[in-house]
Length: 184
Image (cartoon, rainbow, N blue to C red; front, side):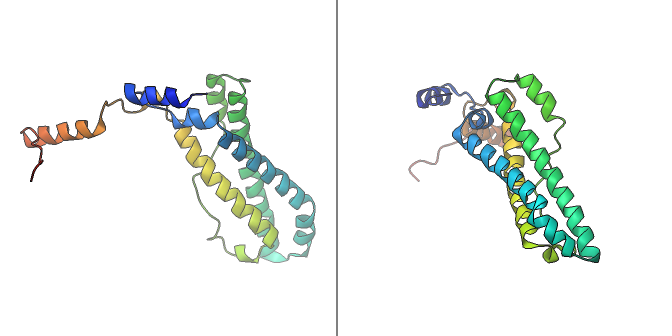
């Protein structure tokens, strides 16, 4: 794990620090891992217990919607749990970065979204709706983390000073050197 002095040295040297590499080895990752696994367990307990009883009371289109949304929820949570397990295995040194990348390609994270547009969603039992909402909130965060983690420092821009680079582009575009507006 990097130390504050390592981060300062990287900043001075102009090295890009990977958020993803830092996050994947942090306590914050452990917290999101626990949150994800707890949500998986809570969902399984609900669907096998109270959810099963509530589903029996539903009729017609709402019963079909319950079945559909519970399957979507289960699928979403399996994908999220797979992502979390891959990241944890990499963190623990159980798999290599190449193995993690290969396994990650099989996980189909969906972009952030919500089921509010689904006709009849408000008529579903509140327990299922709460789990669906929680799964989407977790999915949104993991989707963003996945995007951040996949940015490899070597792929990031390596400009020494992004402001200077922008000033140089402006000078090139207008064909004259930049004059400082100090003292005006």
